[in-house]
Length: 403
Ligand code: F3S
Image (cartoon, rainbow, N blue to C red; front, side, top):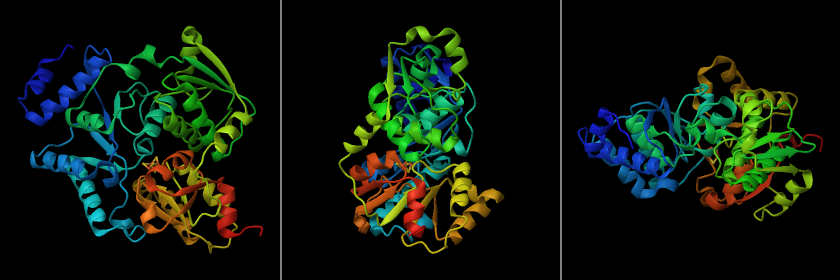
C-alpha cells in the first residue's frame, strides 16, 4: 500500500508504538480488501462502549491509551454504555458494573468523545461524499443510504484506531463502484408501522447478506421509519448500505448509469415477513417495561409521540423508557417536548443503551418494544423475552386507552 511520508512515520513508530499499531492494523485490513492507499476521515464513531461488551480486557486497553496521553485526531462520537451518572437511578446494576461502566465513559471523554449515542447522525449530519469510519450498524446504513456519506461497516476497534490516526483505508463502500446495488427488492403493499418496517428490514438483511439492495415500492417515509428499516437490515445483513427509491441521494446516478451490476430481483410480500416474525422464538406477551429508542429516537419521533399522547391520562400503568441522544435537552423546542413527555410519565433517558445491558439481573423478564433490532438482541444480550409492538399499541396498553 502507498503511504504518505507522514503516514510512514506513524507506521514506523515515530509518534509512539500505540499509534503505529493502530495504523498497521488499518493498513492490514485495507490490504486484505485491496486498498492501495489510506484516506482522511472527518468523523469516527466507536461502538463497544458497554462494559458488558468489552469487559475487563477492553477496559485495560482503554486505560493504556490514557496512560500514553493519546487523544482522538478527528471529531469522534461513540455508542452509549449501559448506564451513566444520570441513569443510575433506573439501572441499579452491581456497584462494580456501574463503576467500570462509568470509568469507560470517562476514558472515552478524556480521549475526545463528544457525544454518546447510537444515532450520531442526529448530532452531526453526515455530508454527501465525505469519508467516515463508523462502527454501529444502524448509523453506518443511515450515513451511507440516507446521506450519501461513505463508511464501511467497521468493527469498534477499527473505528477507534481511525479516531486515533484520522485515517481509514480506501476500499469497500468508500469506492463508488462498490456502492452500486446488486439486488432489487420490490416491496408489495408496504405499510408504515414501525414493527412492519423493522421486520421487513430483518427479512431484507437476511436475504441480501453483503449485497447492496435497491429497495423499491416503499413510498414516502420519514427519517424515523427509514432508520427503523435500515437498523433492521444492519442487524441481520452484513451489508453497509441500501439504495432506497426516492430517498437515497445516489439513486438518480445509479439509475441512469449503473444498473448493469444487478444480479437478482426479488418481490417481498406480507406473508414473507409474517413467516419471519413467527420464526422468532423469544416472544412474550405481558411486558413489565417498554423500550422505545433502539436506535435513539429522532426529533421527528418526539413530535409523533407527543401527538399520540396529547389526550391520554398522564398516569402510565407501566414504565416506558424513551432513549434519546443527549443533545436534545440543549435545543429549546425539543426540551419542551421532552418535559411534556416526562409529565405524561415517560422516563426520558439520555445516552444509554438498554439492549446490550444486563436487564435480566434487574428482574425484567419481558420487555415491550417497537424495535426489531431490540427484538433480535434483547434475548441474546439482556437475556429477556420480547413483545414486538407498534407505538399505538404500547400507548394503548400503558395508558389503558379505550379499555
Ligand atoms: Fe442503540 Fe443499543 Fe439499540 S446502541 S441501536 S439502543 S442496541
